[in-house]
Length: 212
View: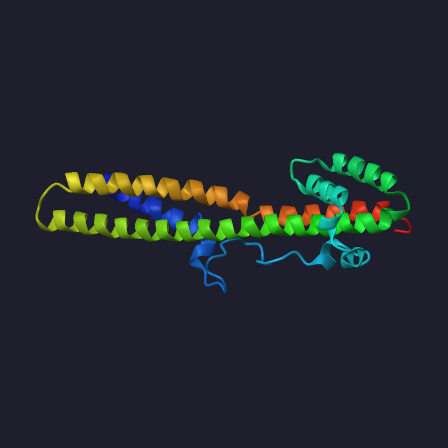
């Protein structure tokens, strides 16, 4: 009977040690759990090597450019469609194509950066929740261990109503922790994917600019 009580403790320990190692390691920012380096913003120079988009004026003042930026920035828009949208926009822009494409780039950069920042804040909130859950699992493990030790000392059955309740709660919380840790691995990729998208769009915009 003692063995059945100990198994969740072992499982919880393994989950805490392996599922989210970033939480257990000293970090400059304890709220950032991802293996990827935390960069608050995308560096424009990493995704764009053309003229300074700021020289084209406010992208929000060009309604068509802003609409294009919104459309191609969306992750729901496949890159093949991005090419078509940019081609049509550049054709209709005529002699002003370069300037207006710069506005599209400025809008795309700002929109993607904003979405990336929102996702990163969400990751940090998620990590804080995981840390609270990890702390609770440790506390539950200690309570279960103490309850088991008390049962041995008082010569009562190790599996009492109290230990059974603690056992079930610990197992449930450990399972939730593991599932959330798996989800976090995927979510941590999102800032990187957004940066890659900004770069790919920047390459396509540059290709449409005359002399680019």
